[in-house]
Each structure stands twice: as structure tokens, then as C-alpha cells.
Length: 257
Length: 227
Ligand SMILES: Nc1ncnc2c1ncn2[C@@H]1O[C@H](COP(=O)(O)OP(=O)(O)O)[C@@H](O)[C@H]1O
Ligand SMILES: [Mg+2]
Image 1: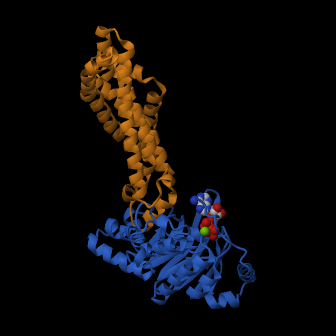
Image 2: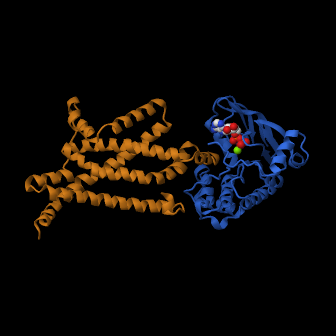
Image 3: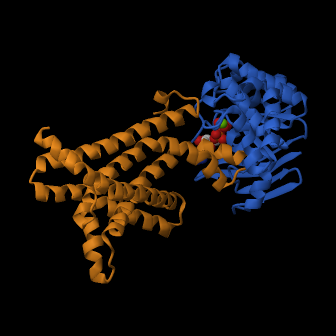
């Protein structure tokens, strides 16, 4: 179980998350939807402590982190990051390492596995995302969809408890995004716990059991994905889903930093 | 054999000797020390506590804002009056090291800062700490971008070592001056010295090209795309 309680996060005067609470069941997938700027990325980044909330609580596995406005201990950072994996909108593969090297990196550097064991595990993961034949390719030689699949394998390498995906398909053409959706759907079937921020209804509907709508830093509505998409209780949810249906909303390039 | 050619051949041995014993070691040592100093200065400016940042900026400000020749004079002729007596070669080595350190720190700082924030975050997200992210992700990428500007610094340095003649280091240019003093053939001898400098920097340029190609290949990029 991954649980966020009353998470508050601001940048300067701007309060981006205004007390967000959310739980992801072990082995389930939750889609995080909401308009651009609603705080989806920031919320995901609070789960692996790329951003440190000012208040609230994060429970992940046996680890409980209470945010008090002080930076957390290095040991806390290390433990939380060991239990989370992240897939970024724009992949962020290491360009100076091969596909295989990207996936092996955490095993070698962080977990200090021996080379041969790390290689075997990395090849297994590349095979899982359908890229066993691209192990020696450089990121620059891969299509966007392939890069994102390598990024997924990299995030899974150290067996995180939860996979955080920040708009994993929104930088991709529809055809390329399909191969990424397939991989995520496969992971979901295998019981990978995921929290996925997305505008891609196809992705959300195929992969997620639960969905949460975030708007202006607040949870508008959460519940089973099928219900939220087809019979939203809130007027605001219905309006947002309608915009997605027409494919007018896209976060591409709206990412800060 | 024409007179000028005879003269050039006769002076070739002493010139090359001066080059080998003084110019090349001075260049290599001050580049190695200077690059180390520049790297530490860059880290201090980017990530150090405030006093260290101020110190690093002060150092770069002084070195970049004053002529190299004047710096060499201060070290070799000036410092003895406060009791610091240095031989010519170490004095020149210190001067060039400080110089390379200041200029290369600006390069290193810029290339480190140019690595996208997302690369740090990707490193953190797989569990690396700051030092691991720096060493495994940021520096290897920064190194590739840094090759062309650092090569420029290196090539400038080879030529700048001629200034060491002014603080009595018997390097290539001073050797040429000595030969001119006895042969009265400044045009021929100085052109010969110039040709040796030209050969040295051409070799370095060629090495730079090869290094850039190798680094580009090691990331699946065409050399053009890597520039
Ligand atoms: N590092 C940052 N500094 C300042 N403002 C930020 C930063 N990151 C995000 N924001 C702001 O926080 C708000 C929420 O951003 P984000 O979490 O990226 O939303 P979403 O992913 O839903 O589009 C936006 O207004 C954005 O400009
Ligand atoms: Mg976002």
C-alpha cells in the first residue's frame, strides 16, 4: 500500500498541492488525471521525494515519512527511492549508456550487484519490454517508444514497490504510444503497482483499476476507473473527461524545468 | 644547400631540445594541474558553501582580469620581496596552472550546468545519491561537451608557454632568442620557432578530432551531431 495523506507543496507563493490524500493498493494501478498545471507531476515527484512536501505524510511499504518542512534524512531518501521507480514524460535515458547499460545502472551503482548478475537481470527486463534485440543500442538510435520502454525497464530494475509514471505516452505519436501502453498493460496484469499521471484515456482505461481527478492541487473525485470515466459523480469530472474524449488536452511541453 | 636551410637545420637540435625538456613538460604539467584546479573551482562555485563560492569567484576574477605576463612577473620577480623565492620553472608552472585553472573552471562550470536537470532526477529516481549522479551521469556527459573548449585552452597554453621566456625559463622561444643573439638571423630562426609551435598545436588539434570522434561513437551519434 502506498498512501499519501494531506500532502501540501508550494513553490514560493504558489501552493500547488493543497492537502492531497491518495492511496494505491498493492498490485493495483491508479490513474492520476487532471488538467495541465493541476499538480500531477508534483504529486508523483513527492512520492519519490524529488520534491519535498511541506506537510503531510507518505507511507510506502514499512516506511512512514512525516513532512515537517525540514529536509528528510539522507537515509530516508535512500529507503524511499529504493522502493520507487519513475518513468518520465521525456524518458531521460542516460544518453552515454546503451539500453542495457541504462537498465544495469542502478543494479551496479546502487545495489552493488556483480556485473554478470546485473547483466542477466537487465536482459531479462529488456526482454520483458520487447527490446532484447536492442540491448546494445544507444538511446539516440532508438525510437521514442523504444526509449520509453527502456526507461520502464530501467525503473523496474531494482524491483520497486511502486512504479510512478509521469505522462509516459504524451511525448509519443499515437502509434508509438501504443507499444508503451501494451507494456504497461502487461505489467499491470502481472500485478505491478503503478501510479500513472496521464491524459491518455486509452492508457488509463486499459491499465488502471482506479482513477483520481486532480484539479488545482485538490482531489476532485476518486474511485474505480470505469465508474469515474463513464458515470462521474462530479460535474467537474464530467467536463474534464469530455475534453479528453476530443483529444484537445495535451500536456506536451507544459512540463516545468 | 641554401644558407637559410643550413641555419635552420643547425638550430633544429637545440630548439627541439628546449621544446622537449621545457615547453612540453611545462604544458603538460600545468594543464594537468590546472584542469584539476579548474574542476575543483567549478564544483566550489556550483555546489560549495557561500565563502567557498566567493573565494572561487575572486580567484577567477583576478586571473581572468590580469595579463598572464604580469602574473608571471609577480610570481617570479615580485614574490622574492616577501621572501618567496622560486626557481624559474616552478614559478612558471604555478603561473600557468593558475591560469588554466581559472579558464577551465568556467568551461567545466558551464558544461556541468548545461546537463539537463532531468538527468539528475533520473539518477536520483534509480536510487543514486548526489556524488553517484555526478560521477556516473553528469560528468561523463559534461566531459563530451567540454572537449572542444578545453582543447582550445590546451592549444592556447602551448603557445602561451613562450611567455615563460620572460621569466628565464630556457624553453623553445628563449632558445630561439639565444640562437638569434649569436647568429643575427632573427627572421629565419623565429620563423623556425613558429613552425615548431605550429606543429605542436596541429598535433593537438588532430588529437582533439580523434577524441571527439571516439566520444561521439561511444554514444551512437554521428560526429557532426555530437559537436
Ligand atoms: N519547480 C517548480 N517551480 C515552480 N513552479 C513549479 C515547479 N514545478 C511545478 N510548478 C508549478 O506547479 C504547478 C503544477 O505543476 P505540475 O505538477 O507540473 O502539474 P501537471 O503535471 O498536472 O501539469 C504549475 O503551476 C507549475 O507551473
Ligand atoms: Mg505534468
